[in-house]
Amino acid sequence: MRIRPEVFDDRAAVYAITHAAFAGIDPMVEPEEVGLLQQLFECDQYDNRFSIVALDDTTVIGHVIATWGAVNGEPLLGLGPLAVAPEYQHRGVGSILMQEIHDRAEQESISGIVLLGAPGYYSRFGYEAAQPRGIHPSVPSWGEHFMVRVFDDSCLPSGDYRYAKPFGV
Ligand SMILES: CC(C)(COP(=O)(O)OP(=O)(O)OC[C@H]1O[C@@H](n2cnc3c(N)ncnc32)[C@H](O)[C@@H]1OP(=O)(O)O)[C@@H](O)C(=O)NCCC(=O)NCCS
Image (cartoon, rainbow, N blue to C red; front, side, top):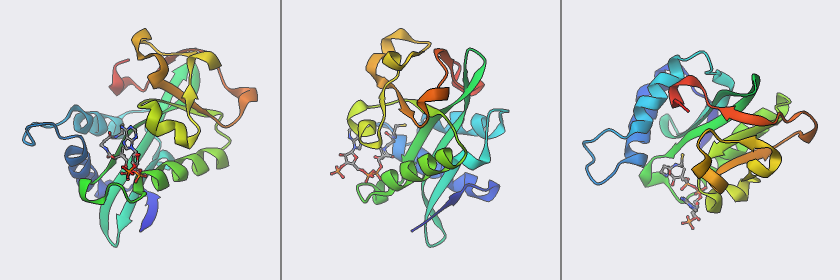
């Protein structure tokens, strides 16, 4: 398996695995994450350094992205979507993608990354509830599902978080 930043030619495959990973009961219905990704790739808050693909030979099998949101005007990365092709799940691909995006964030001296997700999954990567850290979601009911991975406590902004525009929150 190889890991590298996503390039334009990966995008069709990224949409396909995202569709498959998030598919509901009717696989013909496009999950909202696919449209979200299309908009994220086009928006000003997209940063190619934080859009990572995993490949099996030349086949894209997983993708993770973090885009620039803001806390009181201070930029802070927001992670998601994360998707692994169903036939490659439970083999550590998601974990490797998470590790890679964290390594890159640390190399770039990023203070932290927020996400909305299952604490049972993301706590293993060092995520904790964001609100006790002073970062509040735009939707209060997100509660403990709104999480932050802190890299540098000393420059972590605090206040209300707004995701990149395509998220609409
Ligand atoms: C979540 C996802 C990215 C994990 O990818 P993966 O390559 O299977 O992850 P890993 O192999 O590194 O880890 C798998 C472990 O994660 C855990 N896990 C997966 N989803 C979980 C969830 N929602 N809650 C708690 N734990 C979860 C399980 O413990 C699993 O262990 P198992 O293999 O013993 O069952 C993948 O399942 C996926 O694409 N799911 C659909 C899309 C999605 O929910 N994305 C995340 C939200 S944005």
